[in-house]
Image (cartoon, rainbow, N blue to C red; front, side, top):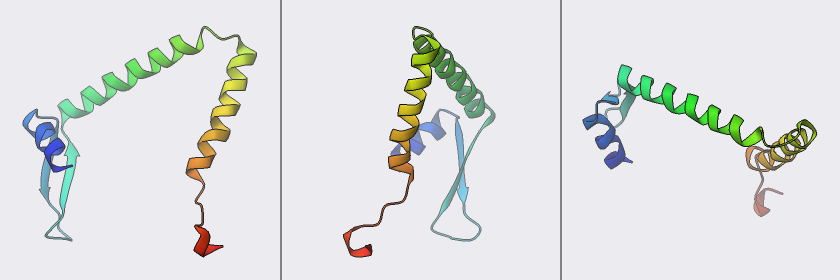
Amino acid sequence: MSKRIDRLERAGLVTRRRSASDGRGRVVALTAAGRELIDEAFTEHMRNERRLLDCLPPEEAAQLESLLATWLACFETPRRDDAGR
């Protein structure tokens, strides 16, 4: 993680400072350039997602949305391990 943050910091996309509450920790924040890059990437991602979905008829797009929501719920729902049952 540190190497990635180092690269982002050198590129001027993030800043890093010591945590006020934990001397070992660091607070990483986006710079204005970092926020701009994220906004551009998100906009392009949404444009690409729209392009991919536009090839489906509306009813199939709705089915896909339902399937993906069900699939995603598997990862978002906390699971108890065997010991917690």
